[in-house]
Length: 136
Image (cartoon, rainbow, N blue to C red; front, side, top):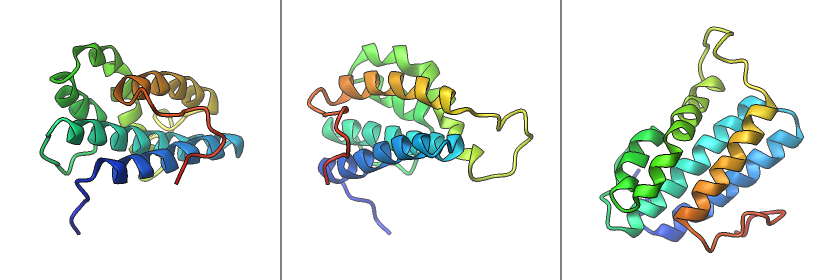
């Protein structure tokens, strides 16, 4: 299956995933909330990169996507630690890992979500991140 090269397609799913983060936090499901935070940021970063002419790659590591994004906006370097941390959330809900690695709390995800919104505002200043439900 070939992925879309249309920025708005990526943003639509990024918004949906961001809404899923909030819904899973309300359900006290930190692992799923963390997974969808990773998914949302991945799609926002890919949309940003596509907007700048980047050739789409099958890559999921946020810190690697961030490295590419920094070539277009150096201030994004401030989000490296966030991207490295949230990249790990992809695995917590999907693979059996030692329990010390999987002790993710809703508070952890909520704090990362606040920082993720700062990143998204730089990538797409026009995004309405406070909407109750993301636009379709």
